[in-house]
Image (tube, rainbow, N blue to C red; front, side):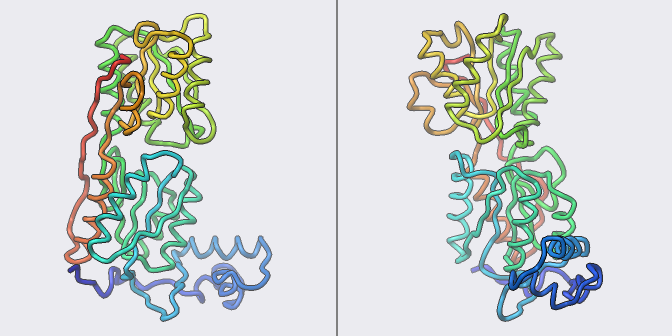
Length: 341
């Protein structure tokens, strides 16, 4: 049984009065904005919200007025629910929290930093036991409110950077480098890259930049780079592969930001009678389970998604009792060579 701490921060917390003073409005106006009651103009609302974030004020939604972050919920932000990656992370989180009677409450940012910031402010208004956030890059306002409240934060899916307090994941830089080295060792000299989310997925960007760095060091070339708006999908991967292979000098190997895209690339090759890796090599990322059902096993990087969610949740439970120290917890990703490279 995990013991509850009475408080996680000894810092004095800003009040509605402080927000009103900074925003230059009445305390009643601040209250109406925070409760979402009554008409408030957009300009005044933005003025109040901006003041609240400037001083680190978080509205308390709990009827009892409990000021401590010690409720039986954990706030979780994920960047997307449009593929299996983060559903598996959530499964690891939920399985671990359930054993201690805690419940995850989550929101989806769609890789937008400002949406993540809004979600964190809203989640904190429920005084959660802790937060689980994706990646290591966040807005300054988010970092400020975390520091102000003292809420425990576990960051997941990345270790390439400095965590707020603890992170659980793997190195995207190493994953990109390892894939580049594998493909270069196989003799490929020209490469293309396919991404999605309009470049907002910063972890995918880290992988590609590391991949491209190794390619350049080897004297090879990145001859094309396609990054599409919106979520990744097999359809996007198929269309991207078609476009790339229509070029006058198509790449010998295509590196996809994830397995959904890579599977679409394979579907295009099969439909067109192209050999993989004879005509073009394909490589993905994540090691999603559906790959085993495809006609050819795609070369990919297998990531420990369930284990990452589990480890982050376990740390939050432990730190709730004894303020367990953790900085970077590495759960390594593994290169899996398939039949497409």
